[in-house]
Length: 601
Image 1: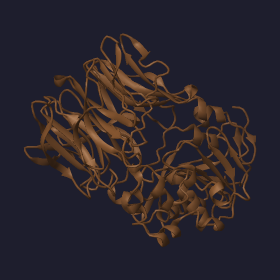
Image 2: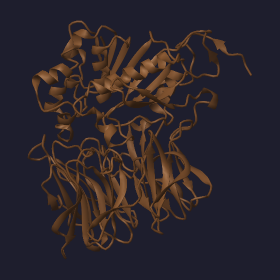
Image 3: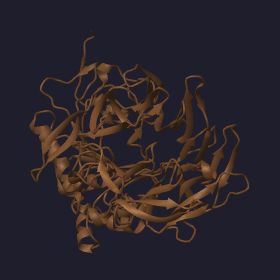
Image 4: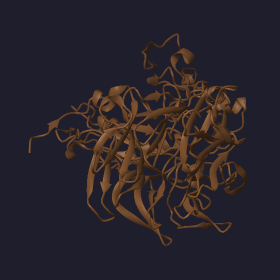
């Protein structure tokens, strides 16, 4: 074995370059199946982020369904999701460039079935009996800042296109229009300000008349303090959904006018619906259910049958497995291998790789695997994080030296950190930095109670948890307490700036499109998050919001800070990001590019 070079932490030579981090990996998501054919979305950095619909089958192999310049990058609610649907050889999708809805017939013929300036469509569902497709429509024509959301029906037949027949309208937000197998019932999710979908939603069920229009609807489950996600009819017509009424998102069914819990587990079969059409579970032909189960921040496959939840030996995954032929496909997201789509021939069969997000770049000896840790917070609660030690087979640090630490703050803040292999993290660890990715109070994957630790305390609990994680590692002798930096994006950027304003623990910070002025955020962000801060901070109050505002406390930040900001960001526009133009333009150099802005304080 070659001798290791002795060099200080942070100076090691790494095979992970900036281009490898930004240009190599594909983003793989949106798995679905139609018979024996698997479909997925592939976002390609080499094509300016163009999102392509791909398919695979045993007989035909892999093929691109939507050649350039088609781009299935969804923007519904700005975060997207639900950009396509396949059924019986038919494909419907929303094109990013013009927001048109395109239909591909089984013979490959393509045509536009809806295109209305100021309208977006997503979250499709086929209604073959009535030769139409159901969709969500976001109509910005009259009120661009307060678009109307509706469930509409789009005709499949040529010459009958238009903006769609409205079936349901009224709530501030809707999602997941799902038709029963016999076409007689329609289910959907809805919620109103100030709730977010992970706070309180309603699951409605309506009977349809002969023309496919809702007659009368009832609330099956949900309310102000219950979050429902992924309603879906089983092949036998039973409506299923995930509810957090027990404190965890668990599966339930609506039978004979009552809600029945299918299986109880101290884990999440569900999640925060930032994106439309998330898949947390799916049905096998025999009635059993394949699901993704989240416990302690780890996502694994599970089989649900007879009231029991049985883990599957798939390793870590993203999204529920998708039944395909005699087996199923799934997104493998392990801590030591690139993201990949795999196919398993039966529950106990062999795996095969269909596509890799990127060729392996690192040898096993160079990969730092995120280790789950728990630590006590300032209020006595237990918080969670993934800790990555420095790792590079070619280097070692001088005896007695401790590594510098980078603290990562995920976005949302109703999101979660996972320990799937990330070149962005390995960029640091292979250079001799330790990294801790914090699932602070407010993160998902740990139950509703943990998620609501942040209520009214955004900028407090998240900051205290990041400080507690850092001190825990320093007191354990794993990192240098005098060399700790902090970085985060969007809501994580807010945490970064807030932490730098209240603590001297961190010696540098990086805010990636972070929120620096929460009151201004309320005024300028998109409709989806306009009232998000009602729960996270409180009802609008200038004194309270100023007390939490990094911009108002900018004078307390005495360490170097770098800002990164995209100029086309509609969620956190540049005016909200605390860039030097809005805080200290007289003293800070600013570099602007087509991609965004970087600056140092």
